[in-house]
Image (tube, rainbow over all chains, first blue to last red; front, side):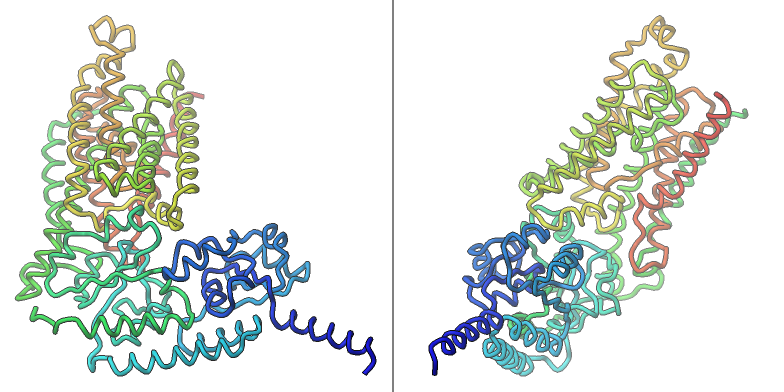
Length: 277
Length: 326
């Protein structure tokens, strides 16, 4: 083979590699942050959202501290010269439009709420970042965790609700929270066919939950709702188990959700049998 | 205009009846004592004792504070459009409470929330009354609008810098005012401040009566105007500041209540005070019952309800004043 041909072939391979394996990935959405961190090493991440540093699981927060953060503005994204931008479908619209106009490679990832959706978007993002095998490994791990959770499920699902002190913010049917709950062997009392529905404390009590899941967000003590979430009536209610959960981490349709479902299934199984009320 | 001595007893009885009825309905349905047995009765007892009674008492306390503060401010400024929400009192209280909540003071020291609410309300009232000193009806409203704007900008700044990413979202709900899911703890935090404020404001009646004749006449009758202003300032800031810190912003009660009773008791400010407080409590209680009973996916916020009914009334008042003073 002639030297120029070899050189151009090598160059082509290199170009292909960069196209297939982006090295300056920007994520504009908290949930795509989680996927990117699960799929690629930090050296290949140009920036994640500022939320990734404060919300989500501890391990991911620590990881996010080691890469730059963005607040979703077009200017900072362009300045970081990304070779792939991952975004959600609902936020940072002006930034997405601008990036689309200047021809930056961008993938808009659906917000998914169920395991099938998680498999689909995980594969989609894994392909885009050139980590197909890693993506399959994440899905295999997820499926194993789901299978284990299934063995732990009680025959009669426990009545549960996600209530964190704000009546207007109770996760309903079409949420990752709901998927985690059902997988772990509980039914969501608030599973009305909307994302979240109004549920004041009285409605919570009269629905007679066995388990109340209380979302904990970053700086939870510096919030209005934390004062309400400590309402004395909850402690006075006989037979109610209150379980704290990381709210941000449970909000994303990513393979890690299966880990939370398994963990919750174990917690629920360890609850004492329902006291006669 | 016919003066009625029966208004206070009438309002008191009405308040008592509505207050008792208010223990029955909730968003989760009615709690009818004769229908409850066994564990249902135990749950109902918890709901009534831990949720509905603190909520009722807060409604009475906050409504009375707002109605009374409105009556006193209208007397002091001799301006029928004066109202805590329009004079920067409520926005000052909001700023104070928001600082307490998102700086973490509130979590470390629960009294910080009503205390800073009081301090903010004091700042707002002081700024408005100072800016409007010596001006007419319009200058007071303009000063109030300017001060409210400034304090709301301050609140937005605090939210911007808040270390909790959901602060702005939470506070947008809170600003609409609500009594839902309050507890005895919150009542106990706010009540001493609000009650002290109410006592201070109630004591201003005689001086306000003298003031209604004019400043010089009042001074010649032995009224210390500077002292009266301080009294109103502190009383309003205590009552409205602490109330707002617990319930969020609830507007127009302070405007509506005095006007609704004035036709019955006459125009001497002193006679308006007690009925205005009772009427304020009644209005807020009724608004809260309506908010609970409306069959919406989300409970309608109290401040939205009082705003929707109060602002047309405010417009009507402005319109009437325009007719009188061309």
